[in-house]
Image (tube, rainbow, N blue to C red; front, side, top):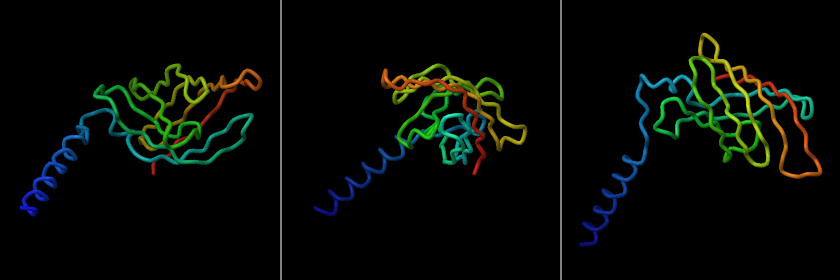
Length: 140
């Protein structure tokens, strides 16, 4: 009896796993962006920063992507970007005390994204700043 119960639990668990994973169709325009990217970022305040970011799809809307660790805010922090042809538009959003807005252009070989964006710290009233930042994402 225990073997049947364990087997049933295993089958149910596996079905949840399969149905919870969102599949991305090969004709989905997001597929060229999805994956890990090496980032070289330049800002007047922080200088050159090097980190990794991940771009992935979380929405059923084929024009929306999520980017984890954008601006080096942490792998658990995500911003949203909208695809408009070969441009990723970062609409105005407040994330972790920063207002971010900008865009990135993907290269013709689909391996490099050049971002230009504005970041304004709004977490505290004592130390606010606004700056223009550039970042080059290179697909791993």
